[in-house]
Image 1 (tube, rainbow, N blue to C red):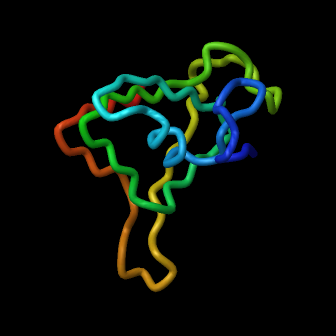
Image 2 (image 1 turned 90 degrees about the vertical axis):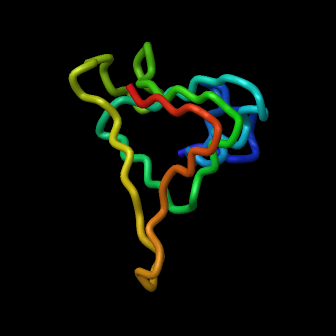
Length: 101
């Protein structure tokens, strides 16, 4: 759950990875924290990481959904396909850096 028009804070998280990546300014660095499992983050649009450095990491504290801070249960990022299966979505990295921990 979340709202892509929100500020992207712990109290008001964004809904999609795309919105979180888009919030990182060009030439900037950002860390995106994902809730711990059983949360699944679907990539249902291409996410551009151009001239940005982005780190995706599990939350360092319990998630709002109440998941325990068990570092062995990492969040899942799942690639999706277009409805007609003509395209698979994912990260597009160009002159940038993406770390997934």
